[in-house]
Length: 499
Image 1: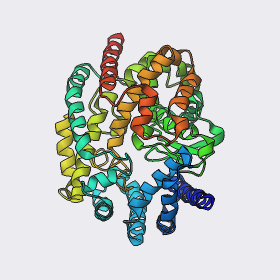
Image 2: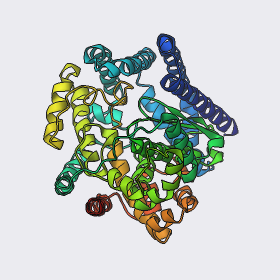
Image 3: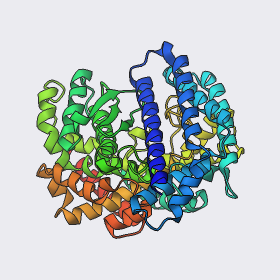
């Protein structure tokens, strides 16, 4: 047994190292890599993906995993890690190594094409690479699916054990309960900051300041700038995230920093004992997204938060801040108004953006919808769900990087994250004697400590439903989110009245 354990731990460590190296290459690709390096980078990531797949599917590991599963002397953490990697391996052995390399190369090439074509609104340039990638993802889903939908096989990679048939009614229920809130919010005039110039350098400084204020440790991380913000970690002690700067609107950067710092602080909060193991991860993307949405919405959506950072805003932007205060930012940040861009959407309408993408993903992977038809279908459903229609693919089907990255099955985790975030906010409110009071008193350390104890330190030791039950005392429910959004709409209306 000792030999089996030594082999298992070495194998898990190699997998973690390969995964961390791929994360570094992807960070560089999306932040600092010159465009001319795209072809070389695609080959590099394809090689690493192939090596990872080869290591994951090593024949002798099957016996090691079986020995660990059958041993009564194995500790719970090792048993859980073996189960997680065993599940990952069971999916991988069904995939031909050549297909793994083809998918990785197609994803890398597709992302680079997306980055360049998106700026021009050039759907014709994107259509070919995305069509090839969708075809490959269909082959992947077909190879690893059991008796369910092909889409479920991809969804399982992000949200283990989730099924489209279970998510669909939840989304329908949400859309129905959100409709009156959207109507209430849009009946009030939108509040916007005056058109002013917010210098990019000062905004990037604000990103660093804000990240440290809420609890991101810059000694173990860094912040970059990218077309699509994301968080990334190569392993213990190295956690990174990026933001996006809009010279006309600092709220975009602030919300992004809170969102990505939520992801990044989760990564920094994993137990050091989990380094180079499968436990150094969230149990699902829904659990990870819950942290991001908690900080962006349940912290950043409060008036108390804007009062905390108002002095720093005046220091960094003395000209742009003339005549503006925390109340103005709070009102602008909480305006309810259907919008074209998902990452800029208000809380009330956000999940409608996810429903749109979920429907299209289902069709693409099932083969009932083709890439060439995406812009037309996207625009039609956007109008039906939100009452607005994109005038360009830049604000329509090409706005997200997820599909060019091959992340089909990822979008539903955003809504699951919103649901879990609302439940965590209720639990934090009780534990801290009032969440908004803690924010107003600058007790961000207490909020982080709450998350460290209830969520972060456990990594993927528990499945997401069990982790959230332990953290909040309640099973998954839409009620806390709806209650939160109802309060937010009332707050938004009060902000309008003060203007």
